[in-house]
Each structure stands twice: as C-alpha cells, then as structure tokens.
Length: 94
Image (tube, rainbow, N blue to C red):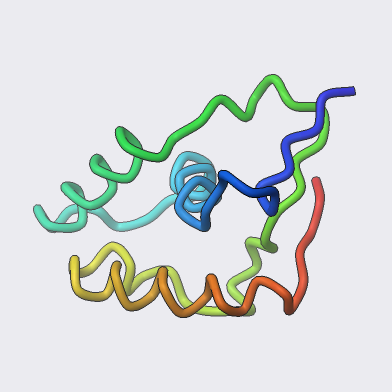
C-alpha cells in the first residue's frame, strides 16, 4: 500500500489545499481568485492519485472557511497561516 501522509515533514497545508481545489467546485470567476488557484496548482500540486491512503486534514469545512482563500491574496496569507497552527486539532484519512 502506498500512503501519502500530508502531516509528514515536507508537506504544508498548501499541498492539501491543491487536492481540495482539484476535487471541489469553487467560484473562481473573479480574476484574482482564478490567479490564486492557478498559482496554488502550479506551485504546490502533487501526485496524490497513485496513493492508496491519504492522511491529512478533514475537508468538511469544520476548521475554517475556504472561500476567503480564493477571494484575495491577503486572505490567502492569513487563512493559510492560522490553520497550520491548528494541525494538532485532528486529521483524517481517506
């Protein structure tokens, strides 16, 4: 079995976020939102589809809302920095 542990050293919340961006629908019609998504996907995307198990954050929006991340670059910085400190609150596997 191949395990991708996004909580391991070397990974950040941003790799997890690119997986979420690829598998959820977000309104990226605003130019800045589209640019933010493109930047994240080009910079932090990783090959996760070959993994049998992925360990990481839960994607149920229980920790923070994702929509501010795509609305402004300032929100991106603030929203990503704060949840990283909350990583010990829990994780999930799929």
